Length: 282
Length: 75
Image (cartoon, rainbow over all chains, first blue to last red; front, side, top):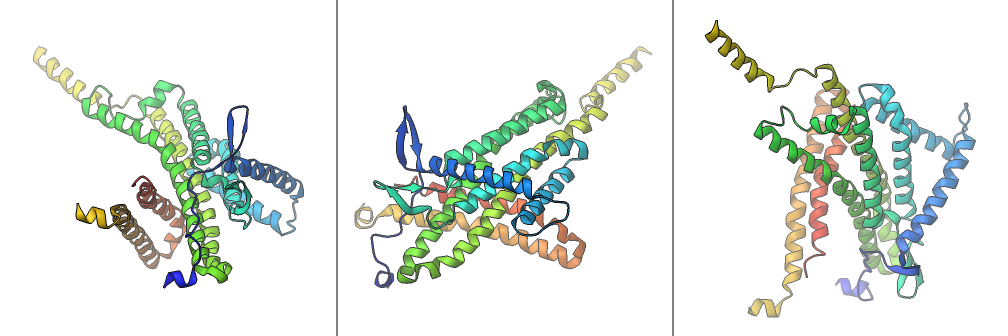
């Protein structure tokens, strides 16, 4: 029955980016090409917005960006116990939020994908619909989080100490602490895979429904495109809030430890031993 | 052996993977959304925790997406 309405071999689905050309041994894929274009657009647009901001809001798209900046600023500042520490990291998270958000939305434009071709492969591809791109964003974010939390903790050893709830010499706490460290390392993968898969699945769903629609392709793909606009905003928000949480947990924990540095759980059995031996002597 | 010759078992495998992999996250997201609405119904002040509910939606959703990603490995 579906064959009645649909023509062609099936919906065109790309999961991996395609090579467009080479520069001195480096492969330039279509997602890199569109990523550069989007980065340029985002930079020019944001610089323009920054010059348009006035004390009395004029409305329009500047107002929209202002609301977004305010939203992320509140979110980051409230995640930290000390708002002054949170204020330092606001610019980074606002940048990450708008970069991902605008890249997701620019990737939904109709000419991206099958619009232009160079040879067999499409010339443009959504930047966040490429695992390499999201892995780079995730790696940069998590490196910032690690470096910042080491700096806030006051040294690498003090940072590593936070993974152990008690003394590392206790075998149980040691195993739990090492497991916690591995969980921490998987965050790069989980952040980038979530963003990549959400955007790619959106592309595939839109592709499938525009294929099923045949003549009425714009109509059948429209609801899913609208849904993808929502998902794009949601994914940018989730990426930002999760990386904020990772940083805030480490920093808040560091402050907690600084106040009660002497109270380790390992101290309890030792004092019992001392008093027991002391009582035999006395 | 005969079945493997007659039908493409990779398609069946992919179907099972998608079906099984998406059941769990669907139930999980339903539970999160339901409990969020219940909390808001009891205490309308709790409506401000929508952002935290969305974080858990994102965590749960990842497992469904992983199931989707792994269908490309099946040949």
